[in-house]
Image: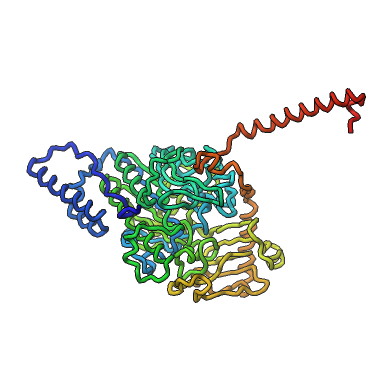
Amino acid sequence: MAPRDCAGPPPPPPPPPHAWVWPGRMLAMGALAAFWVLSLLTYGYLSWGQGLEEEEEGTLRAQSGERPEPSTTATSQPHLIFVLADDQGFRDVGYHGSEIKTPTLDKLAAEGVKLENYYVQPICTPSRSQFITGKYQIHTGLQHSIIRPTQPNCLPLDNATLPQKLKEVGYSTHMVGKWHLGFYRKECMPTKRGFDTFFGSLLGSGDYYTHYKCDSPGMCGYDLYENDNAAWDYDNGIYSTQMYTQRVQQILASHDPRKPIFLYIAYQAVHSPLQAPSRYFEHYRSIININRRRYAAMLSCLDEAINNVTLALKTYGFYNNSIIIYSSDNGGQPTAGGSNWPLRGSKGTYWEGGIRAVGFVHSPLLKNKGTVCKELVHITDWYPTLISLAEGQIDEDIQLDGYDVWETISEGLRSPRVDILHNIDPIYTKAKNGSWAAGYGIWNTAIQSAIRVQHWKLLTGNPGYSDWVPPQSFSNLGPNRWHNERITLSTGKSVWLFNITADPYERVDLSHRYPGIVKQLLRRLSQFNKTAVPVRYPPKDPRSNPRLNGGVWGPWYKEEYKKKKPSKNKAEKKKKKSKTKKKQQKAGKPANLAQ
């Protein structure tokens, strides 16, 4: 049964302050509080505009009994809140011209800093791994695809994660939402990678209400965890966006705002399957395409959830010393309702539509609020940026690919970043017409790769689906009948060059006009490739089947199992050898001449 709303109920009020209050005023505050609670129960929760109005009048603070933020004992370290949306398209936010209403995101971004030259990776696992390690995929072995549920694979254990570094300097660390960085061993779980608490899913997708996921026929299981155990108590049909928001509220309600907190909120929305509570479809009846309509409802639900998270930060005294970062993990998928227009390509590709993301920073601590940052920023940059803000230290021997970009965002200074390695995937399907000759003997252009250096972007190999999909193309007729601007790749084509600053929509390939620049970027690719570690992409392990694990997706690999098995084989071989020896002796044959 679908709940009434997606942001969950309003945060419960914390204990009242111990300061003495005049009885008459106490009665007035009590009456106002009662009216406030009644209103919330009636309407679900406050709208963004109402919340701000009440905050400005001071009534929200009085009614909720918000804890005062001590001026002398409060932490100098900011509260860090990182919100990661899943599969949100570049166009799919109000301030990028979308028909989908996102008043919370629009307001937070308008009052903060919009990141309009911000890049992530084209699919889930790579973006998450780069955020949490500050390293490119080629330096963690996760260059290819995603971590599949059945693979004995996870984020390499020798990488110090962002929550681990924040814990070193006193942060309480909590993760709510989608992990998707592997779980085949217990050591791979979020609570073993730096998070004090974890509430969410381990896989890349699943049902929003039942929290079940089938990876293939006969490979199905429950995927909702509380720390290291299946959260069966929450198997009651609550929509995940609502459920995750409620958990965030509970964490904030129980945490002392005088102590720093890191909250990583990785919502499942708006990834497929396309599911949303019915009340969110009301505003989008005019959208003909059913996938787009469902997607719009999901995004509206997510927008309201973030509104409620923001209100909880204010209610519990965190907001004034907080930094809220919002990001999508990759581009949208048009076949699943997303839109990246006017960018080229989609999720899973290295065209701008797959890797250029919605992103912004909202914080009272920003020096230049209400601005747009067009400097180059990448998802790996959050690692050193947040550690620096937390007054932490990064070991000198750790080779990071991210940069501290806080001054770029907050003060409008130039970005220290001048290039981005989007990826080098040596095992992706090779381009049939690629060759070393096409790469001037510098690079094999059959290999899928993409790099950005200042204004220039180079792609080689097979970059993926390359059409532009305008919003009006959405219809119930499906992708085969869309009025796309289709591109037929010319025979022998395996290299593309674009000036992204002048041509962000990648319409004019300049590779033949500027061969010198092509060569420079190919050399840079070659230099990066020399630092790459081997790809980690093992075959599936049948022991991963949830049927063997109580119907739950979870860790299955055990070191002792691997150790015992060879010893058993050796014992069996020794036994067989002994029997053979006895037979040979009975037959009168010397043992060393057998067969």
